[in-house]
Image (cartoon, rainbow, N blue to C red; front, side):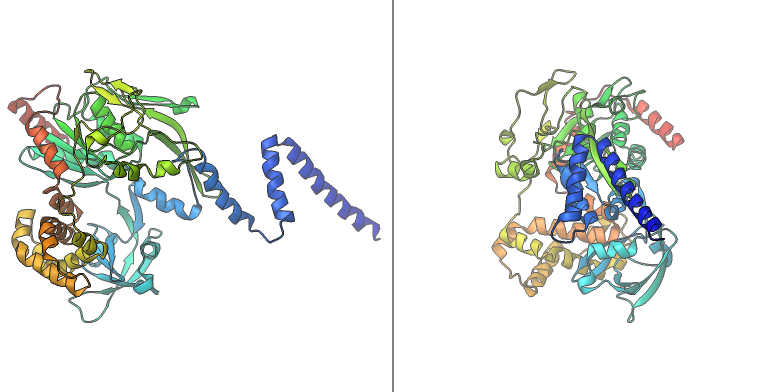
Length: 547
């Protein structure tokens, strides 16, 4: 009777061994090597090993050896990484900042779940359900974790409001919250429209076109497109944006990859609606990827001017794939080239990208932020635009008009108060005091009339800083006067009127914006046809009918 079970057990063991043998012999030598090593670790290593954890640490390292932009995204991070580019996420719909270990609401998204239940800018979030969000709990990660969630789920928020002696409770049902990529659009003067694009998300082109159309109806005949700090996103959105300024048959970008499906060319199928309007593109060292595609198309087609500093230099195209366990791989599958044929990808060594990561700080160290002459151009990578202008590959988009980083007002006192977070904290305090009257301001002119006078605002800040550990040093304060006031007013405007007002306030003293204005007024930005007054009015009427 014992023989049958014994034979059965031997049969099972033999089957397992034969399965392993036939499985491993079907693998190629590289796969066999990896399989064998992992098996040895699991079976023979002296300590217990969590193989899943070990492999999770291996995947990022493996992809980092390819190039600087291929990446592994764990399941726990994939949603957060993706949702900012998808155009919306589910949450309560507030923007916040953490001051003094407290979560302060600085903006309530119009039409979002929080607005519907009555949350207000200036409210402080003490708890989300039973989770304390003050003190050590007041971290960005904890706030996101507890405010975002599945659409239709509810979260109970305990709120501290200045007009209430007792904390208030609001039950908010999470819903879709739009993620805007056009941060600001307004008229710089009577005829020059400004649009700030912070990312290239799924909804960027629609937002962008709507902003241009609105400015055009308001009288804009020139445009400043601000892509500073825009690290990129979806390539197709940059292509659609560039198409608005180019004639039919113009190349925007093309890609080359190993597989045929990753090789493409984007050519305008019809002339853009803003073809005959002068345009300037603002760039800096953090403008990358899709930002560089847009700027490269404008520059190489001699359609407009690029103003600012040399861009980041990312000419690699990634494709994101979701793996069976819901993690993701963002793999470089092609290089992209601007219409002149240049790749703007800066140099890197596969598997040795430390120097690549230090590129921006190296630019700063050898003076590139302050002098155009310090920029190192690769004379072996010269290309030409349609009119024969020289452009360079291998290191980002070189601006047509260089603007150095503004260091006016930078003093040790200013750096002290910034590093201590005192400008933000004092601005929030002022915003709380003036919130009721400031919210009635329709523009920055009205806003400035309500605020304390500059001397009063500055003196109040200096007293506040002194009370919080930074003594007054008036020699340096006078040098930093305009910078401190500009920062204070911009943050107060953001906390009371929204982020667009923040951008507009800072732009009033921005040298790069000033250079764009000068170039447009001087007629330096090329256009194909200058519309007459009658043509402009007629075009605006057609645009109004379409929208």
